[in-house]
Image (cartoon, rainbow, N blue to C red):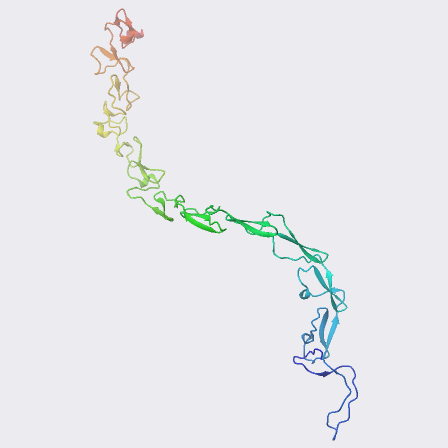
Length: 360
């Protein structure tokens, strides 16, 4: 029995003419004996899918209650009937499937180490050269082709990988089997950008500790008087004679971090001076104890300098004056033998000249 187009199999009279039916028995209402040929068709309410003959080269339809199969000729079979990658194209010839060579229907076996082609309708596979890259290589495994297969070469155990998480006290390394593992790295310090903390690693755990007893700062104003904010974020004692840093305008910092008088400022004792030296009534840069030196020399007040030539220095002998170069020498009128003995620099006829005489 051929396929029907009814949801349930049904027997129908074929559409072609059949034999003449017989005469009913008795009262004429019994079934007649006919000469018709049995067949199959489709109910008017059914669809073309009821007439599917499993042939991709025919168009199946239901027409006037009968299945109709229209043959395709000279065209490709529908995509659903094609086999991908078999180097063949299924075509239809007067309603019958027929294979044709199609070298563009190249197979794909997802093997990076082989090139798939079609040659005369036959699938072929050619290995790529050994050493060609394949797969997804990482720092810990490098993939390459060998004899048409993709194989991996593992990096030695302990090899550091390129990308590291900075400041986590850990080092990412290869495990020797192509994977990644981690080990403690005490040099991978967790820099938090805060100069007031100590960046440390403890058993692979990052910590940022503020050292005890250290005054931390971001600017000089964060520090005590006469202290400046150093590069490491700690307050440091300022150099002597530094102005500002909490001192009054007429004061400077001393070596102990106190505000004192600057050199040249009037003083009564060394305790009032940043230098610790009060000489000739002013704060002086040194003790200025050498002969013919003073800290109140004109235009050099506050700096120990040579007393001007011809001036008296109590530290010289009573018959001596300063020569202007820090030395006591004979005053005018004192007996001499050479110019170098005289404060004026002139020994004339056995005696030192005065300064006016030396000039004239």
